View 1: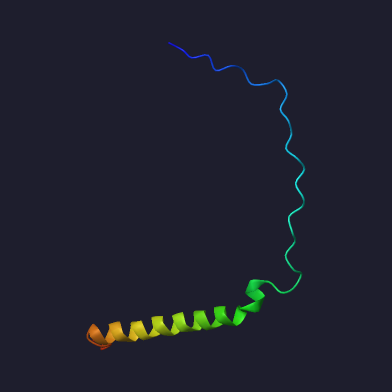
View 2 (view 1 turned 30 degrees about the horizontal axis):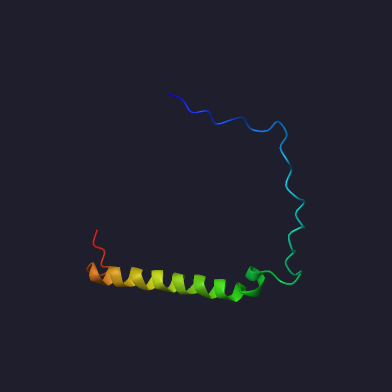
Length: 67
């Protein structure tokens, strides 16, 4: 059992020409604008990792090394 769906037309109409996309302003980009936020974020993460290393060392029994 099949259903007759008809054929597509031989010629396909091209869509109307689109206007060009608007260009962003030529000013500074977002990263250049907020570069200091990236630097502060990296420093905060580094300090948190360092503090976590100290805390885990203290919780693990200190740093006493006995060969």
